[in-house]
Length: 241
Image (cartoon, rainbow, N blue to C red):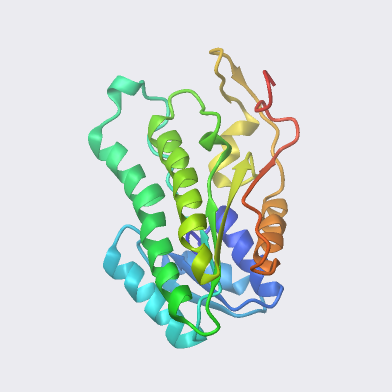
C-alpha cells in the first residue's frame, strides 16, 4: 500500500497487518515507514518509494513479488492536497503538476504494476482499492488540482473494473470525508465553506476508515465494493450541511 508513512495509510497498513495480511508499506520517508511498522506485531515490509517515479514503482512491485511471491491487494492511497487558499487564476503550473503527478500519475503507475502482477500470477487475480475522496463528487472552494485528480481517480477505477474482469481483478474506490489526521487538523478550528464562511467541521476516527478498507479487501473476488463513502456523519457534505 502507498502513502503508508502517516494518516490513513498508516492506520490501514497496521489494521491489515494485525488482521494477518503481509503488508508492503510504501512511502517517500523511510523513517516514517519504520514508525508505521513498529505499531504492529504483524508483517510489514517497508519499501521507500516515490510513486511519481516509474523506476521506483517497478522496484516496489519487484520487491513485493520477491518477498511475498504475489500481489493480492493494492491500496492506492498516496496523495497530495496541493496549494491551499489560492484563487484559480493564481495556481502555479508547478504546483498543479505536482498534485497531478502524485494523485493521478502515481495511482496509474501503481495500478498498472499491480495489474501486471495479478494478471500473470497463479492463482490469477487480485484487488485494487483506490483512495478517492468526497471531493471526487463535491469540491471544496479553491481546490481545483486536488478535485480534478480525484474526479480522474473515479474514471480510473471504472476503467480498471472493466479491464480487470477477464483476469479476476476487482477494483473499487473508497471516498473518505473528514478522517482525523494531521492533514485535517485545521478543521477543528475552521475551514472555508462554499458560501464564504469559515466553519468548524466534525471529524471521524481514522480507524473507521481502516476497518472499511479491511472489509473491502477481505471480500472474495467474486464480490466487490465498487464505491463506498465513509465520512464524519455531520460534516457539511450532504445537501447544504
